[in-house]
Image (cartoon, rainbow, N blue to C red; front, side, top):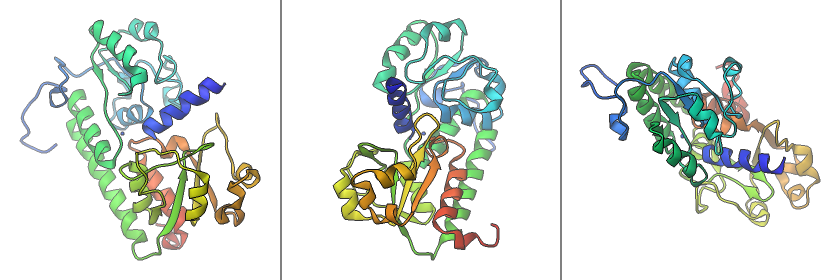
Length: 296
């Protein structure tokens, strides 16, 4: 169980990623991947990328899923296990023509072995909203779905702009985003979560912390006294507001005492993919319900 939690947290932290007249290009050429034709048998080990493939209308090309892909529409697919440590045997038996893997040292042996077997591997780096847009366009290029990718990017930009306009002029609340509570792990500047907090009308209290997903001291959290604590959770690692109210140090936070701990779904917020607009709108409604009284 403890190993499963560590792997899940690792995935959350890693997570936690066209116009007329364009030249015809070899699929994947813009990202240094050589594909003779758009791949038809794809395995994505990154849940946010899996969601992007589905959003692009290419779910029928997926031949497997990871344990962390929970979309009911993919339940019929075989699982290759954990995203960081998948079953190599299971992967190769599926004969994929494209595997999308975490660009992390924990995945290195799998990536190298797949490359030795002649399997094309794409390892996108996704930390910011700009990375999400770039990755969407790269996938559109590889899959021969440039127009679908361009449309998805445009819709995402328009929705985020609309949310930002809706909360403009409202007081910015300070936010402590809790990826994990023991030790306190949060988001720093330069991540899409930090950007979503800003778009939703908040301010990340650790925007000045070094690193993208820093571990911070509880003493420093107490010094900064956020207006709101955002507590991400999953069914596998349920950490709720009641646990914080009973935990030493945490119970001294005014936001915890006053019931200003908002629980959010880690599977939504910690996945840099097409559902960032859903996360941003939900967060904006949590921080500024007064801005959405007209039902917008």
